[in-house]
Image (cartoon, rainbow, N blue to C red; front, side, top):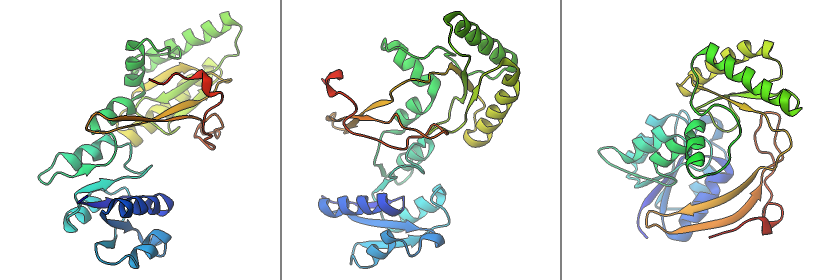
Length: 265
């Protein structure tokens, strides 16, 4: 197999990608910041020999730095690992649509864009007949409209005898970022403004999603790997229910719960 991969990450994930490249006979390049100059992925790289080298960058989230190194070292692909650019459709699009196109190892930018937006993901689920949590089905930018939806959800919960609780989310956010809980309508406007401000600053989109809060749930996932050749593979299920107060996964256990609950096709 021919090609050279720029590993746009650090630490443990960079080392795992390095090992995978070696198994496939691929040359690779790693990047590092000043703070990581003595990290394991950089130290290992120094002893790997021809075809492998390490380049200093200012930040792991500077696309200009990453692409400049990729071009200078004649890389043919970029592997983002997880975090950083792995869910940034703008970066994936920039990598693949340019004068010297590179392979973005991961989902296409179109898929990242479709599923990175909570509202769009709900629309896709609804089209497929998959139940979704009660709440908005389009991003809300108007405070009065948002407050009316919040009041409606509180009224529904009161009718159900459920404790009042809703979530105000940045529609374009991910990874538990830009999510706040509201338990009284008097709190809503302050929280809405806070989330909208965060969404504009962090994601460039002030759209807000409002949903009923579910407290007792199981967060189950099925990992899928699909190739450009229409090959599909699943890696069974995993349980990600144990999360931080910031709604980020802390423990992932595989397989998830009783595997007889799942049907794989």
